[in-house]
Each structure stands twice: as structure tokens, then as C-alpha cells.
Length: 273
Image (cartoon, rainbow, N blue to C red; front, side, top):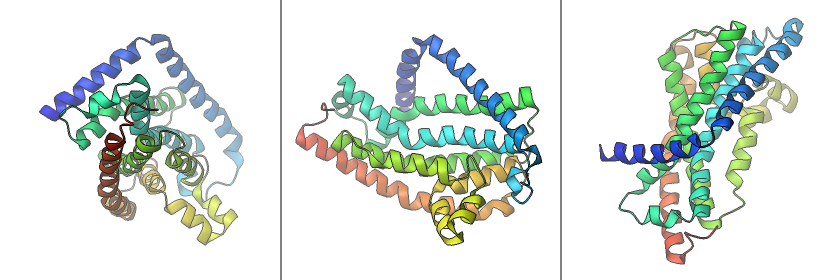
């Protein structure tokens, strides 16, 4: 209950800040609708192209919308905490937050909680607008798709903790956000079938670039459920690969973040940015 109250306090604070920019909220809705509409007309161009060999791309619009919705969520996963740390640094409040009697996991969850709420709303809009205006249909077990989303987000959030650790100590020049952001967009199959990458770079090189990124397995699982209606037994390999990523990344990232906080406190650099 104490953890929930602390998370709620952070969410209320960030919500009140976001509420002061109401025009931006409506612009974002229109922007997402514009993106969905653009993908719809682009998908009509590809109607006659031979995409039948790519199972999840029978309907390019559905593949793009699920990809964009998940990309939006995944990007928040590995950037939310680092952005929160940077904002606290620039506002001069990071030292005050870290000197309060709360532990590291609470700081991590609370600081990025609002970003996930915001990302959930934005991702929902991609899927909702596709269904409402362009008759995009989703199938399969929604709970299973949600499980993939949570698991993938936790994996990317673990990398985001490493990103935040870098920002905590070095302030600028975070390499994780650049590498993972580009890797997620280019190599996980958001905008085109990942098989095309393997065809262009060779099967070995393409698979290494694709499958070394947790978002590839997460997007495969989510699309397999929502687009193809697959059951757990058909997507269990992606599920357990994600679980393996999480078991390795989460403890390591928490350990690194704890050391980064101790170093910043020791050097007195918490208020620097």
C-alpha cells in the first residue's frame, strides 16, 4: 500500500503538469489519427504486392498499426526513467527525491509511472483509430497479447535502467537510447517484415540483428496473437526467450543503477546536469 501511494503521488504530480498543456494533448490525438490515416493509404499501394510469404503482413495496415502501437510503448520502456532522471536533474529536485527514505525500485517505478500511463493511452489510440475508421480487426487472446507486452516492456525497461544509470553519472551522451531506439525501429520488424532484413543481410547476420533485440520477440508474439490468432503453445518460444532476457537484464540493471546513485551521491553531482 505504501508503494502504491508513492506511485500515485508521482502520477498525480506529473498528471497535473501535463494537464497544464491541454492544447498539446489534442494535437497529439490529431497527430496519431493522421499517422493511422497515412498508413492506411500507403497500405492500399501495397495491396497488389506479393506479401503472402510473410505471415504477419497479409494486411500491411494491421501490421503497421500493431507495430507503431508497440513501438510507442517500447520506446517509453527504455527511455522513461532516463528522461525522468534528466528532468529531475534540470529542475534541481533529483537530490531531494533520492534523499527521501525510499528504496531504489520505488524510485524507478514511481519516476516513470506517468510515462507508462501516457504511452498506454497513445498506443490504444493507434489500435482504436484503426478499428474505428478503417475496419482493422484484431483476434486471439488479449490477455496473452498483454502478457507479451508487459514482459517485453520489462525487458526494455531493464535496459532503460542502464540508460538512466548512464545519465545519472555522465549526464549526457547516453548510448543505450540511441542504439536500442534505432535497433527497435529498424531491426524488429515494425515497418517491414523482419524476414526482408535476413534476405538482404544474409540469414545469419539478419537473425543476429533481429533476435538480439527483445522487442523482436515481443512484437512477433503480439502480432502472432492479435493478427494470426495463435495460442500460447504456438508462441511459447518467443515468450520464454523474453523471460530469459528479463532474468538476466533486470537484476544486473538494478545493481548498476544502485552503484550509479552511490557514485553520484559520493561525488555530490546529483544536482548537476
